Length: 446
Image: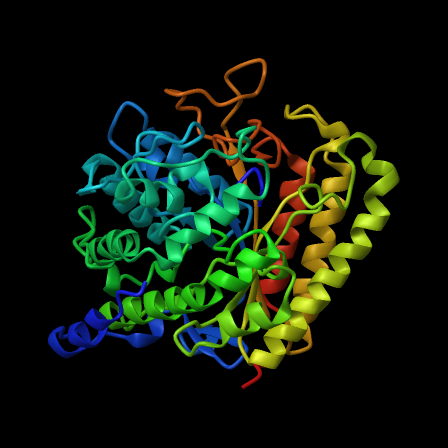
């Protein structure tokens, strides 16, 4: 969303040299079976959310707040949430909208407190039986991401989103150079080895043996570029990066699922063949889709009431397209990001969520219908949980040094899409869906 390597030879060697102790009970992990997930031998379907900043709250540092993290997880659990998608890498970056502090710099782990914050967050999630999807870098600038990796190896060169000298889609075109830049990918792969090989400092459990983790995700919203000609040129490298990184993760960890983090057709140059190829690799366990009606100009923030119906039709079509693709691929589908503005485009908790609630209801109806009819949609993650977080500044902009973490990342207005703890109607809707999806009884295809 807009607001948001060939280093393969080592994989075979790692498979040959690593030994994996058998898990005490493999059923404690989320597994893929055909077009569904299982856990404990039973179908696993879930209502989830996004809380990218979980590790930040979990850090025992001035920017952390473990008491708030526990309260947020309690609130999410009480709302029926059983899966959370979290940022598991951020890169020390020259980009103006990149979050700080960050997990790593050019040389490797730069912030041990933040890594320990991720440990703490996972440990607390385990107490509440909430599973995690951890994404390992970002196509977008707000956590450093791929553009920052490129800056590490090209003498510090980069471009910012919104730079007048580099109008859209210069940023995605330039960022997609990452896939064919072997030194940049090597640094990223080193981070994967660090994180997947980590032992949780709170629980003493190795990450690769922790059933709290449901899946590793290659990146948040990886795209092969922006302009059609650039996408075509980058595709071979993009495919090699996708499969090669997934192979690397699988060589390090046999217990957890792997997914791309892709937006769907919007992140695939509007081409079904690109989405299909990227998700057909056997190392990719399930399909993903993100849905952003406002970002994609399907609705008008100044006239939500007048444009909502037309946006609803486009959302329905997008869902239908991705359900069909998942069926064709024979893999589960997760609607792992979906967001909608508050009525009138406001950012404060006082602004109504009438149309947002209608949109959430549309997504949840599609998920539940799929579950009840044996379809491939296995879960969903709304974007995102603000909880107790509130904008600090009157202009709702994030500024360096802010620690009132919200689900809206630093490059976005604080309060734009996030669900506050005071959003009673939205939380009731989520809770009702969570109860329904937990008991949806259709067998899993495959």
